[in-house]
Image (tube, rainbow, N blue to C red; front, side):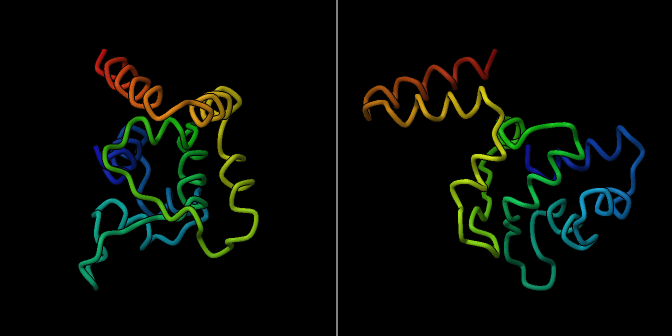
Length: 127
């Protein structure tokens, strides 16, 4: 599932137009359209939303960014966005406390432990 699929499914289930959804997110209608398409039709380039956009989308959908990352396959996001200062703080502010704790634990693991944990999480996601 792509981010565009997730947004489209949410909008369809909730009877919300692209324009209304974009307005709720505080994002341009064209950006939501491009995310749903997966490409910018003018350039043919893949659309890579900023972390701020993903955070706004997540809030409107009643999800966390981590929830979106768990549902979306092969997801790319521009974590720097227009404001590259305090990038770590901006990212951490999008995580709930369990996700933050999990990230901190994961970062403290050896490369072998990380590989094992990734395999465990992949198996858990299948269930």
